Length: 353
Length: 254
Ligand SMILES: Nc1ncnc2c1ncn2[C@@H]1O[C@H](COP(=O)(O)OP(=O)(O)O)[C@@H](O)[C@H]1O
Ligand SMILES: [Mg+2]
Image 1 (tube, protein in one colour):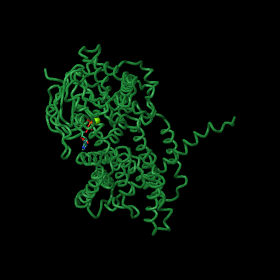
Image 2 (cartoon, helix red, strand yellow):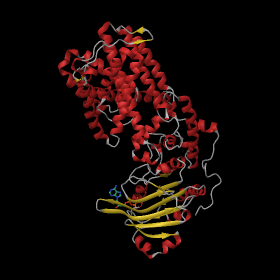
Image 3 (cartoon, chains in turn purple, red):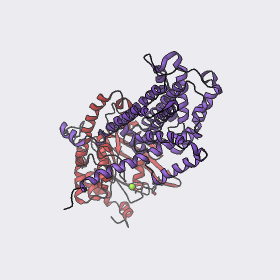
Image 4 (cartoon, protein in one colour):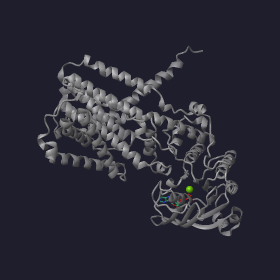
């Protein structure tokens, strides 16, 4: 068959189907609504939590949990969605905080917050761009080096960061003249940003951007031969993830009122890069709620276990092993499992014939 | 006029093995179909991999007269040349429709701008993309599986899914690696009919295949490889009579 005769419609070889037929048959399942119902549920919980929180110290813990939730959402974006394992989380966190501290006194909260987000997005995109050809493990190690480099630069660039002294007197958050000057108000501010972050991820997961990203993540060079611009897609996703970390940094700077580099190396004696990884793994990489649950649990846990402080490392190690061996999908996978089991059992409740 | 695809002296070496040895091949525009045959391990898949930039290669490659850099996956896709694989490459974690949609040529609002600030515009483009993808699926007979996970597809169906993806990309040239492997007789002749239709629309193709009837039905010309070397080329009926080709296949259960 030589096919020398040109067809009737060479420009448009695909037969047209009617619009409604397509809509009915192929509206992808992923565009379902259940994530939004969960979102509203969590929003109600966040709104009512201050009823059971007592005292400034507990509000500090809660704000901390929210900051870690935002950090973990950024890590989830980079790791779970884009398939990029990075150790540079503390670097983006720090750059976000220092950018905010630099911009807030003259620019005000919103502008400084925006600056932190934009600068860290650009820095994240740059990281991925420079390392575009590095395979997974090399990329991870390189981000470790990149992260320390950024922190060293901040340490020595004293006119910008205050060096070892840190930066003090960062203005408290204030939006259109409303000052967030109490623990409760700051809790609500950070909670709102966390919920906005989750909403952004839910929207992303319901968009063609997610589809392209997952295909690039899973299919490697095959995606490129199908016409996808793999490098571009991954650079954008990595930058977007980093911008979440920058947002967390900005909130840290303005709620704490000062930043110094020790805030970005460890929390409760555990490296922040590892702690965030642990939060995402414990919560689960299969759902946007994983990082939120993981961050909440691992921020509150050390408080509950304060009496056993000397066993902290042991406890973290056991959690890592249990998650990896018993619960590789994290807590959210357990919840999903329970839900599908319950819905499956329902028809079985009918009396046996 | 220069051919649509022109491979000149493509050579691929893996360590000491020369898997493809100075093979040249030309495909014309407008529905020309060239078959690539040869015993197992003769370098057919490696040849397609070289064209699509998946393995480092030497030689010269042009599409419609324009040079295409070698060893860069996706370089040739910019020239609207798309492919399928010997082992079907579908993402089992995604639905059939999504597996096809990624190849849509409509790239508007597919990034974070469409995901966040410009969602209404994104939806308009998405609906058009769904429709196109549904048409591509319908063409290969998988429309009723559109929302099923690709993991549930049988081997032959995965091949068809790959083909739908390649068709959605509006190719000028398709590269297909054993598209009929694993299909029964009825399915094979249905695929041949589909591919003849594709060719009649002006889409050219390079097809690797072992099934002689399939090749004869589809290809104007075939090229025979043995141990990476081109040993014959021409219309199928002439090539089969070539003694070198008969030798190459001696002992191969065909
Ligand atoms: N990635 C690779 N690395 C090393 N050798 C390879 C690779 N791909 C193919 N080969 C070798 O190249 C030769 C040709 O293989 P292939 O192109 O798959 O043959 P065919 O598709 O004609 O059956 C074989 O000897 C095979 O072992
Ligand atoms: Mg092969």
